[in-house]
Image (tube, rainbow, N blue to C red; front, side, top):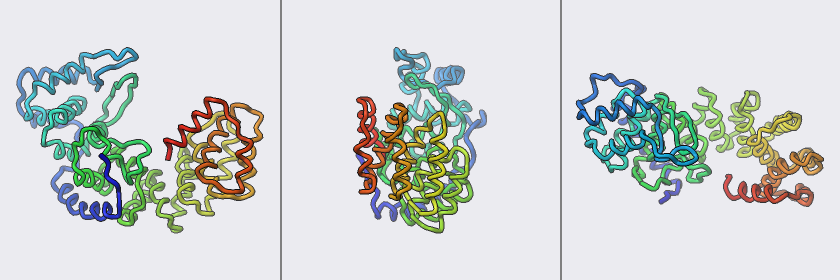
Length: 364
């Protein structure tokens, strides 16, 4: 199921802000990292022991881990918790001091179809406790709020729905209005520090109702995701904010992305400078290179042609194949008659042909 983000969506989201004000007033704006033990309702001995064992392991594991997909004792504990805890106990465990216990309890509420999921989720938006996860073969760290939010509100890569991929989940836990309210809270509550907030900005389309808030985040927080969202409004007054990304360390990808979305003339010399810098590097920032080629393709100039021609004439086979693939993606997405002759000089081996097809099909 997928909801299109239309102009009506922006109006609906604006109206939802009134509801959000009520939510923000009713929900304590505190980080739910270590709830006090004396606020935890009484649990049955079995559920209490399960929670202690989960906390002692302290890793949030999926049903199968490692190359062999081994079933773990931790997952067995989670299944027992979901099966045998009452709804009241699962809700009570949302106040447990250990974040892994809270995450498993919330996951159990979802699987049980608990009607209180949404209200609990609103509190979890402030839960920034660190959680180690072991999902399949991947060990990583996230925060409890992001983990729980993604269970019912996953951010889908390359989503074109306007903001996040909130409606892509197999189990549609959130109603459309609830997901819109979550969007609003993430965007307008300054105390929320979840990664989901910045994923929302990264995917956001330029609805006028959001402009001032997006600009405020880009200005006050220096968020590159907010600068990217701001670039999509195509306002000359915002170019100074965007240009800062070119001067910061580790924001080159976002700087190029902004120029791709909003090819203002003031960005062009900065893109040329970035190209020259990256061309001289021994190691490649692949993500930056892909976006840099696309950004430059938005400026069909003789100098751009000369920069692109370096790749087509490179004697370094790795550079030719790798950067040539990124160049072809750019020329395909942003065609111009000036660049057409370059395509005849790009010939790829089998693996890079497959990579080219994948980029064109999956990346936005």
